[in-house]
Amino acid sequence: MSIRTLDDLLGEGVSGRRVLVRADLNVPLDKQTGAITDDGRIRAVLPTLKALVSAGAKVVVFSHLGRPKGAPDPQFSLRPVAGRLGELLGAPVHFAEDTVGDSARSTVEGLADGQVALLENLRFNKGETSKDDAERGAFADQLAAFGDAYVDDAFGAVHRRHASVHDVPARLPHVAGRLVLREVEVLSKLAGEPEHPYVVVLGGSKVSDKLAVIEALLPKVDRLLIGGGMCFTFLKAQGHEVGSSLLEEEMVQTCRNLLERSEGKIMLPVDVVAADAFAPDAAHDTVRADGIPSKRVGLDIGPETVAGFAAALKGARTIFWNGPMGVFEMEAFAHGTRGVAEAIAKADAFTVVGGGDSAAAVRALGLDESNFDHISTGGGASLEYLEGKTLPGIAALEN
Ligand code: 3PG
Ligand code: MG
Image (cartoon, rainbow, N blue to C red; front, side, top):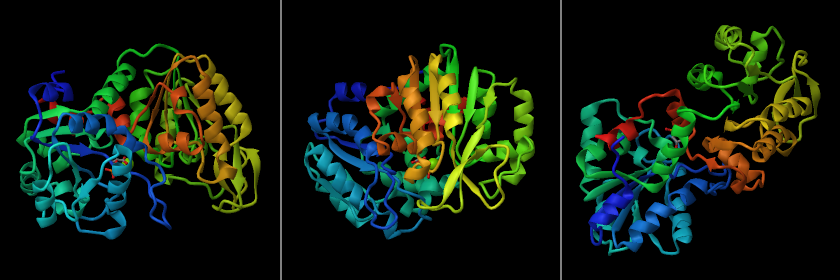
């Protein structure tokens, strides 16, 4: 792999040069207040930004936030992120009200050496996510005009063929930032020859999102533990009733095939916390996974399942975990995620937590991040990496 790195760029000298940094500052926001609920992704790019600031670069950061539809939408503004980034850097961040318009232009032009600007949400512009090469290219031209070099530190977005990820690096000297480098280093260990037993824990809501990674991982792992909303489609595939739990009816047959081919490697919940409603204070109790009453909704894995998963994790030498085991944002349904996270933290294994949600869960549950070898900032990106797919953002750096 011939990827140039931030150190290569720093070695050339960046003082007075404008350096564009693609970051993934797509942080979760509180639905009511709009406050940042987890700033892990902002912290994760600090090493790259600080190195550039110390070296005297004019640093122009850009990112997406959420999924606005190609036009400005105030609920997805990066302004609060600029504030938080400034606090963490210990220096003000100059915020541009648009991405490539007048405000962006004057903000970039006004930067002194060692100062940092953040442009408004990339996805306020149609060109960012366009499937049309020319439209994306035209937007990439505008972005590239703001920099003399490009650093990709947006690991969470490397699987997107978007202008800022895929087309801007084609227009400028480009390098991988510290975060992207570290992520690739860690995940390539898992994709290569992980030490066995290799146990993977998957959760989250949708089977359809995880199908490709399950297919790719099954031959490599010793055990695949499945919890979270996606487990109900598997339980249904085993012939169980799942009440009003999350269910992807069209995936049931696929899950049945996977179970048949899995050589017994797939472990499903044996008990489930089932509630009257999807609400933090809903009445709930633990039921057998093969007998979820109709009208009840499964919101977490049960204690016996946690114990079984913990036993499977105990002897592992390599662990990858993606996706919460239940609705951990509600205390009543956080025990499964907490239990599994604690079992992973205790295991004498190389442990990797992948995904925005599971990483946020680790922090939200107050677990010590240092008990894990690596907490990835990429959800979809880390899964696609493990699937062995070509990632547009990485491929762009290799060219
Ligand atoms: C993520 O949160 O997974 C990344 O920031 C990518 O966001 P996206 O899934 O909206 O492209
Ligand atoms: Mg995503």
